[in-house]
Amino acid sequence: MRQEGYVFTKEDARTILREAREAKQAAFRAQRELEKIRYQFGYASNVNNIEYYLPLTTLEPGGNCTAILQVWDHQNKTYKNSGKYTSVKVYDPFSWCFAVGRNDYSSTTDIIPAIQSVLSGQVEVIAPTGLIQQAKPDSTIATGGAGTFSIYQNGTDTTVNVTANVTWGDNGEGVTSGKESWIRWNGAAWEWIGGDCE
Image (tube, rainbow, N blue to C red; front, side):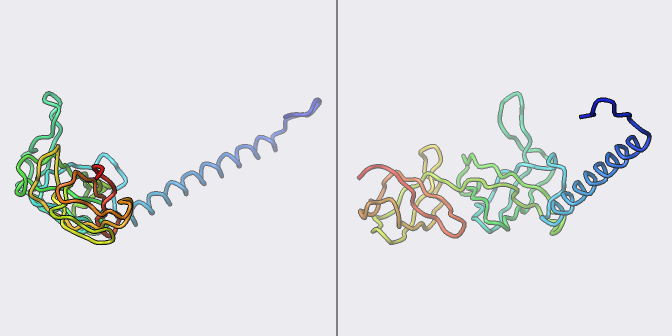
């Protein structure tokens, strides 16, 4: 605030202009640093480059799959084949995605968000997707053990199986064969996180 009787001088104006220029330069430097970080992370800065793929083969976390580029059909409110590519390899270098492939389950509802990495040149998963799944154990699994779970979508067996640990939340009872369950990928392995009461 200006004190009463204070006269605004040319030097005050120069100081304000100099500080404004410095703030603008700092903002540009911060923007350049952000772009460098985005580039080092491996993705283009424009989020509009995100594309969506229907997996043909099942994508396991950390793996890759063959997929078809999709576009959103506004009239039917669903994804449809873009017709742009016959198929593309989609990679998951950060173990962010699980998606059931159409070749394994023709009614799969899984869609993979991906972007072309500026570092690797590959199409890579851009966000955590499908890391919690409906599943049923193929046999009874004792607490502290691991076993095969069948992956389900909307209550239907996809025929895709994964191995999951039963180490927490089962009250020492294990998990009975065929029990409706939920499993999740914890970044390193599948684990049982709950389901029907015994």
